[in-house]
Length: 339
Image (cartoon, rainbow, N blue to C red; front, side, top):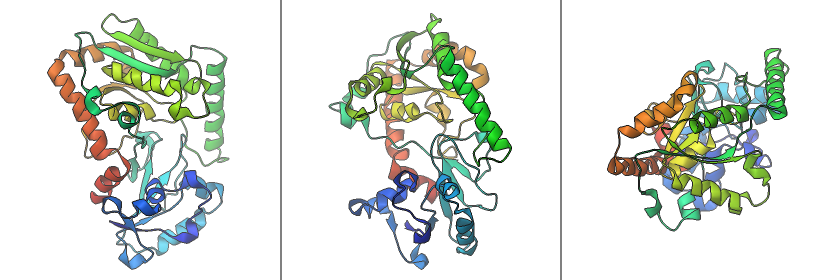
């Protein structure tokens, strides 16, 4: 597939806001990777990419420029775009192309908005000797892991709630072009889920609970001991608790799939990638938000359906799903071919 992007709408200095596939294809060594490439001739293109995020276009006051380009673009070519970061922005209704995003509440979004994975580096190749670590001994009692930030009710909870209320008010009154978010303290939400699991005798908890994001580490995060602990925690567990953070998505979800483990996915009206292709409930323990008090029972029920052979088969299946569908090139090959 060949992509065209309008250079008038591109800003190389705002690198975090560049469309993720475009950023990779611009690197010379990747230019012809996976049958995906860039052309400077619109007539040779199979697809048009808006090169920067909608967040960028709002912040730089270029929405009208984007819409003018979109109106003049060939109707036979799909136009793809994306929303960056934890908090979504309001995409103009006139835009009928595809909007990829990690965040947002699925039930509130237009049909042209699609989930996109968090593209994580392969943790097995980075931190472990081989993929042999995917297979493990499985006990009758499910081992549930979690390594990350969670906080009991306190000042931090109140601050998070206040910020969400303020952000939602500014959105509702038109002062900011951002999505209205669910009112919750996400670190307190995690704490409640983890304490619910701890109170159960149906599972074995393997939790490392921190009171700060990444234990406060800001430099060399990828090589810090806390990151190694994070992936060791996943490796040693059967299931990993995955729920939203500041944005309505979980990076841990994709890290768990990459490690060949089973996410316990607490669904807060999330938008998952390739929902029309992947039957996600075959790969994870699905817990709807209004059934979160039953999380331990749902894990135990899921675990009873498996023995060591079938569990290890599912570990390998989840790893394969990440390799084949949730990495950068594989994801865009699948989702854009479908369109």
